[in-house]
Image 1: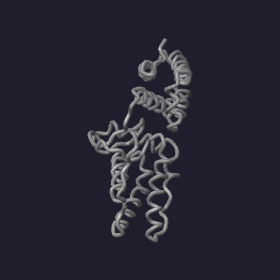
Image 2: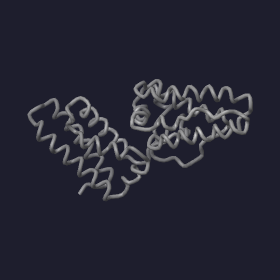
Image 3: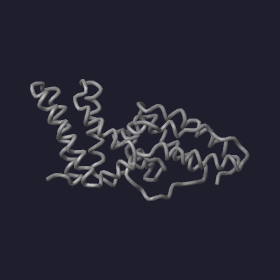
Image 4: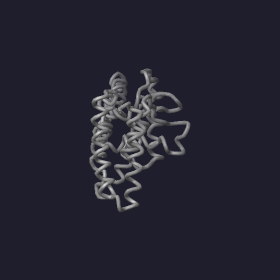
Length: 225
C-alpha cells in the first residue's frame, strides 16, 4: 500500500488525470493519460493482475487496468481503490471520474493511440480478436462519411457504435448469429450507398474502402458463406 508521504503525489496525478480525460482529440494528451493512470497504480503500490482481454490498454506491455470498452467501470475501480486508501488515512474522497468515461469520445481517442507514432512500442490497445481492429477501421470510415458526407453510411456507423459501446456487446461478436446479423445490416447499407453514389468517383472510393474492410471483417468473424 502507499506510504502516507506518497499520497500528495498520488493526489496530484489523480488531478492531472481528471483534466486529461476530456482531451480526446489530442493524441499527446491521450498518451499522457495512459501513462498517468499506470503511474498512479505505482504510486498507490498496486498493479493489475487480471488476464488480458480485448480492449485492454497496455503500457510497456503491462496492463494499466483500463479497458476501452469498459471505461466507466475501469475508472470507477481506480477511484474506489484510491478512496479506500484515503479513507484509512483520514483523508476526504477524491472527485469522481467514472462519469467522464461515458460515451464514445474517450474510447475513440484511446483507440487511435494504436496509430500514433509517439505511442509505438510503448502504449497500445491489446487484442485477442483480429476482427475488432477491422470493425474499428470500418467505424472510423463510416464515421467520417457520417460527419462530412451527408450520412452516407449512417446505418453502418450507428450499428457499430452500439457494438463498440461496451465489453458485453463486444463479446457478442463471437456468437455467429449476432455477427451474421450485424454484417448483413452493414452489407445492405454499403450496397445501398454504392448504388446511390455510383456516378460520384470521390464518394464511391470511400464506400469501396468501407466495403473492403467489411469483407475482411466478415472473414475474420467466420460469417462468410
